[in-house]
Image 1 (tube, rainbow, N blue to C red):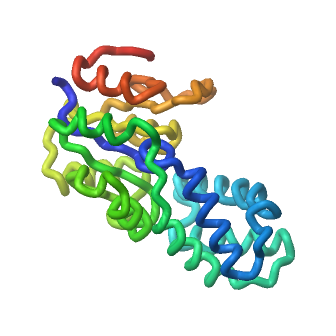
Image 2 (image 1 turned 180 degrees about the vertical axis):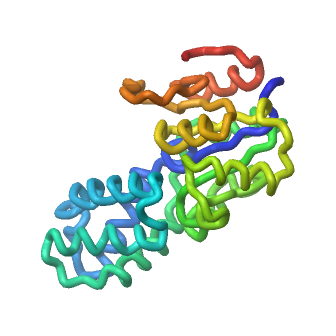
Length: 234
């Protein structure tokens, strides 16, 4: 087997972040007396949040700044008198309570348990650890490494260097990065010089110049790829 260390992104790779976000936002809006907030403001929030996460990948904002800034912009746009710091903290707490594992993940990870399984995520450390601890995957991973812990974020090569040093990984050729984001997971792996696997269940067209080593549509393909090292889709 070529790959014996598998680095997994978490959100939209193993966990359904759309469901997580929806429930956490809804509970947060209710807590601040805005029962229709999810319907009224979610579309605006998603646009703002996406832009800020892109800024994070490009080093233009920090994670702590993102935590508050997304709600500061949302409430300014809709002229809401809600404290963005308080709302941001409530939202983070609610995120940590949401567990929505994508169908097929548990079986896939069990079938690949002979490999070293590691989470590598740009998400908030407290949130990601809490969600995994509440999930059926809580005993699955050798390590859960976040951008907060490392001081870097995907696609920076330094976060991968941090993983290699922490886990005493010596060879890049036996490591595979698996994730749904071309600009974060795949570009990051490419930057560091390890093989990458783009999880693309919706078969979205790649209109970027970022080239993954592999592209898969489901977890069965990942199992086959790892166990047999067969190039399925490139």
